[in-house]
Each structure stands twice: as C-alpha cells, then as structure tokens.
Length: 359
Image (cartoon, rainbow, N blue to C red; front, side, top):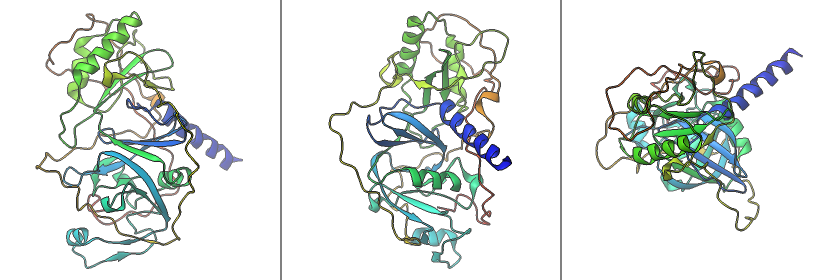
C-alpha cells in the first residue's frame, strides 16, 4: 500500500511538472507525437496529438560542441547500449579506454535513442552522472536522467518529428489568466531574442484582457535571465502561484493569441517502432558540431527540484502601462517559480569522471 501511495505521488509530481513547466512558442504536429528541445531552457517537451504530455530537464551540447538546431526525426532505440568511444572523446579522456560495456559506468545510461541523421552523431540518452542534468555540458547529445530516458524511450515512436529550437524566453498564461514571463541565458551566444515581438505580444494581451503591466519589471526579467517564470499580472501581498496547465502565447509573431498545433492534412501511416538488439554498439561523436567562431562558455541555468506550486512568487507591483522602453538598470528579480523533475528511481552509481567529459 505504501509503495502504491508513493508511486501515485510520484506520478502526480510528474504530471504537475509538465503542467507547470513554462512552454515555448511552438506548433506541434496535430496528429501523432512531436518532440521539442529548447536549448536555452534545457528542457525536452513531448506532444501527442498537439497536446503537451511530458516535460523533462535535459543537458545539451556545450558551446563548442553544440546540439544541432533544426528539424530531425527520432531514430532507432538501443537498450543497454555498448558505447564505442569516438577518437575525439578518447583523446579527451586520455585513459586508453575504447569501449564501455552496458552497466552503471556507461555514460549513455540504460538507453540510447537516435536523434536525426546518424552522420550527426546525435542521440537522446541516459547518464551515469544524474547531477549533470540539466545543463549545457554534453558533446552534442541530449542527456536525460536515466529514469526519464527510459520513460521517454518507451513512449516515443521511431520516425516521430523532433525539433531542436532556440527560444530565450517563454510567455505563458496560466489557468487563472495570469501572464508569466521567463528569460533564459544564451549558451550559444545567438543573441537572437526578438524583444520587439515579445513586448508587442505582452502589450496586445494586456490590452485584450484589461491589464496593466510594468515595463520596468519586464526589463528587469529580461536582463536577469534567471530561467524562472515571473508573474506579470499577479497583485496583492500574497505570494502568487502558477496554476497549470500553462499555455504559450504566439509571442514570436507578436500575437496575443495562443500557440496552435499544426493542422492535420493527411493522417500519416503508422510507423513501426525500431528497437535495436539489446547491447547494440553505439558510437556517437560531436565531430561536425563545432561552431564557426569561438563563443563564450555557457553557464547552466539553475533549477530547484521542488514542486513549482510550492515555490513562492514575489508580489507584483502594478506600475505604468506597458511601453516599449530601453532596458534600465537591473533590479533584483526574486526567484518565483520553477518546474519539477520527475522523481528518480534508486540512485545510479556516480561516475568518477568530470561531468562535461561524459557524452
């Protein structure tokens, strides 16, 4: 009975994590599964028939071994993979080891899911260093905590689309019709946050909903880039709490409407899931993922492994109506909200290697 109670509690935590994780502005496939990986946010989102079903923390490629942006497909899966270490990583490790068999010391963890063309050397996999997730520290692969990787691998279908995106902000409306803004650091130095469209979307939504939003607060959030969602419309002295499910505004287009799934034109034929023989050899590298010019080393966005709804939000002062104003001096932005990572199974043995040397 206790075990069932704990399992139910864990399931509720995981469901709450998906419901209250800030979501990017995306248009998932209206039918079937669609994976989105937002690099600055260090999150993987799984949509089914246009609806968000799971959200996971992930570690992505470092600035010098970036995870390839763009459209990909989910490839074959390998459970308990054998890792054939590429020469580039053998040189980094400098320990003479060329192969790592399945087991607790395998940096790929218990499962490897191919991401995109095999020539890219990319995959979504588990890890033997769970504390490295989330982060910006891999050789290009998308690293998950092993329990999450197993759950994802068992639920995703081979051939499903996977989009690797780069959105440095999220703009969400919660169930209480409050507006939440989060800004993320720029690990690949893209400097591509469209603040004009973001402000236009906020202004349009505020006007449509009869709200006044502080421009000063928006500027402070965008400057701080804490990765935490801040309520722009909450009032009163009590601490605000985000109430899921969250819905993204189509802010990349400057709109006040919600992001929508891509309409289904033709129902795609069912794809047979492709699972490689257990223990299959996997060789993955980051050989073609080096950016054209040196970039500043990224800093991982910190997260708090506690339920989002229990994290207090600073009260929001209602100031001047929204205007497009140049950023002012930074004000302190109190951490207000974060998502929850699914409860782990018994701890995986910790690697003795530096976490950014692992794949």
